[in-house]
Image (cartoon, rainbow, N blue to C red; front, top):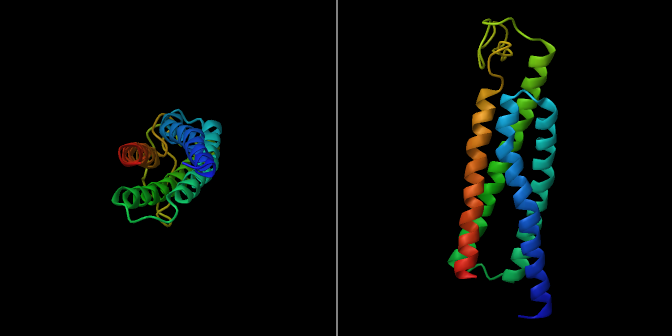
Length: 168
């Protein structure tokens, strides 16, 4: 392995460690803070998801440079495909985080009396969601989606890791 290949491998692994760890932690922690109605922390986790999601592109770029355009290998094609699927899921997680922030802010700005509504209930005008009751749940759908998709993304990272170690 040449020195330039070693440098590319170092950068590939470095980006994987320093981008995937915080990204996975941010996506997996978001549902807990939505449930706690901590909009400040959810905003920070949303920002972390955006930043570290962009940094994962470094993993892809340096990985492709290491592959030198040789995507004929089945494990490499599978890894690229899984990466793209994970990236799409991360975009959906980011969208749901934004929606949850909006719903949390609306619940704080205009609380509904206890027992007056549930998450996802539609009002008479335009089918807009009403904030949940003061003791009810806010952004329950987004919380569930973020948790599910964050878990799938974490599993995808592990599958890619297995493919890299076994076949690299």
